[in-house]
Amino acid sequence: MNVKTMTVSEVSTRANVVPEVVRYYSRIDLIKPKVNQKNGYKLYDNNDVSRIKFIRKAKTLGFTLKEIKKILSHATSGSSPCPIVRQIIEGRIEENRQHLDDMITLQTTMEQALRKWRDLPDGIPTQDTVCVLIETFAHDN
Image (cartoon, rainbow, N blue to C red; front, side, top):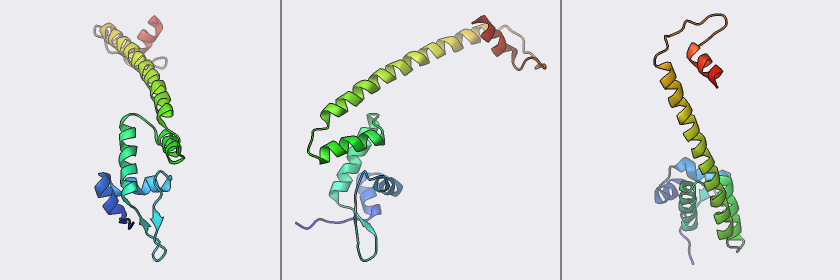
């Protein structure tokens, strides 16, 4: 079967990414183009387009390129990557929940600070102070 080869610009158009993304994924071995022996150009095929589309979808789910590489490695070795995918996402969901909790705590703290600061006069920095608002709030906690 004759496989149609493509240049970086052709594969980037088909995968809906900029050419630098194709080059970068090639450099870090997420895709492995063939090399034209005559001129050294990298040649891509439809499998590379599919792989780039997969990588982009995985990134929208929050997978890192390192994690995607691991997933692809399992897939190309004939093992199902699905258990790893589930494990990574479960961990990421927990991380996200913790970040959300941290952000809610920070938001509450910021709102409390602003309420306290509304009626305070602006302070002039001295040798011992920089911003009386922050310093006053920090001493309250």
